[in-house]
Image (tube, rainbow, N blue to C red):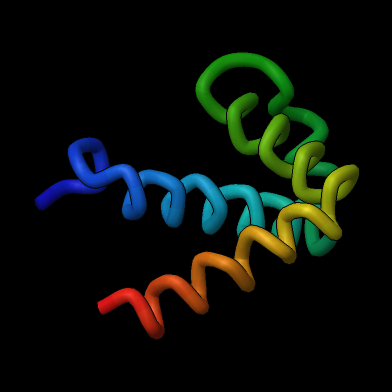
Length: 72
C-alpha cells in the first residue's frame, strides 16, 4: 500500500521530509535559501517548520517511533 492511501505512512513521510529538510538546511543553508520558490520551495518551507517547531517535530518523531514499534 502506498503512503497516499495509508494515513500513518503519510504522516511518517511528512515527518521524515521535515526532519531531513531541517538537517540539510543546517548543513548547506546557501543552497536551501536560494531555492525558496518552485518545487524546491517545499523543502525550504519544511526546513523552516523543522527549525521553528523542533520540540513538536521531535515529539512527533518519538510518537511515530512508538506507534510503529508497538502498533504492529
